[in-house]
Image (cartoon, rainbow, N blue to C red):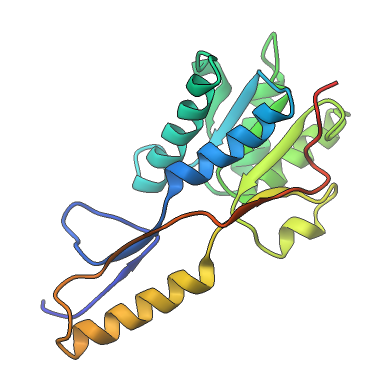
Length: 196
């Protein structure tokens, strides 16, 4: 229709204008964090793996495992989406495995919150028995019990680049807006610890 647009944290083959996070690097950093703490049985509560973000986060998780010499185990990947309920049900599925994980990388804080609830209900200690880390860092992460370790993403920069890019498109100063932003840092909190 000719209406200027910029997609935020979405990348589609037919849509040129976007500002996205490096979802691969974010998941890779989260996985590397728990691997560095001595965890080898690391699960992933994945987002929607048919979508761009979910695919890239799953690939980053697998890449970190392979770099550490670990073979990714399909049983340790559960598509939980981006909801509390998905994380709750996904974590219950992981706990039912003959050999449950000792660490979980969640695609989002909401699914990590669901995982924490499932672990609490099963009387599994966090981080004593299972460490949990999530991609994204929102105020809610500090309000959970235990406070959630996260990978912080540059939200303010994303919003600024998207707004500036859209104004440039409207005013004819640019033909395309394409940015991929790196994760800022892992924010260690009480939900992750060295494997005992």
